Image 1: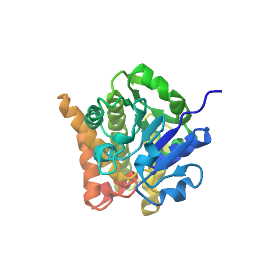
Image 2 (image 1 turned 60 degrees about the vertical axis):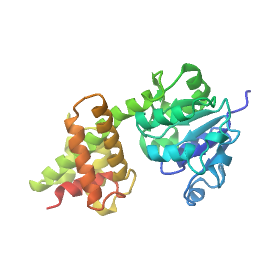
Image 3 (image 1 turned 120 degrees about the vertical axis):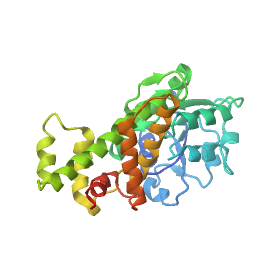
Image 4 (image 1 turned 90 degrees about the horizontal axis):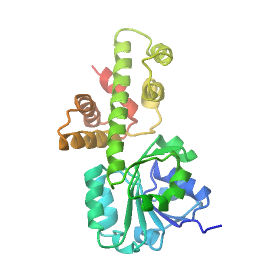
Length: 292
């Protein structure tokens, strides 16, 4: 049997930690890094946790980056403790974060001349599917580079289609995905808020409408948490959709494509953050819309 790919995994947050653990369970040797000391409590001894990102990246066949923003990706690569100089000439940099096409393309340009191969592979599916290796991964990159990381993609994803040959195509696909997700969450909150304001039983509306043509994954997934209010578990922070809907509207503006529903949803998320809900679950849009 061939030797499994060695992995440096940078970013062990809500999504990154279960993804890294999935790789470790699949038999890949994983060295990890995260800026938060609490990451060790999550990953335990399943993978080797190192205090410096350059040590986690050095000598790895594949370096996976799972951060929150384009600025963080740039810092991981080129900041004070940036890993760019620790990447070997045949290293594959597998960017699985949602950072938008412009940020990823800029970082890829910064790596030119180093021999580093880049694969663009943002994910969708949430923490539960990350833990079971059933994510959707939207992959952009050269065929030979994608083939090199295919064993990792297959371990983490139930579906990992190649959506384009360019680094950045995965991010473009994810932008479309987030437009749909962001609008669906917002409209689910709006619908249940309207039901509540009209004196209907919002829980019954959720139960009944989930069986008909009006339902969606986000309605069924976020709806119960919307009704839990302050007791809702934080599975996806509102701040993530402030960032992601900004990526959507930025990408649309770059190609002169109007996205009026996405723009309206973005303003709802911005309002929620302004009201202090940024770290709350994104289902809080229901409470934001019900506020009098």
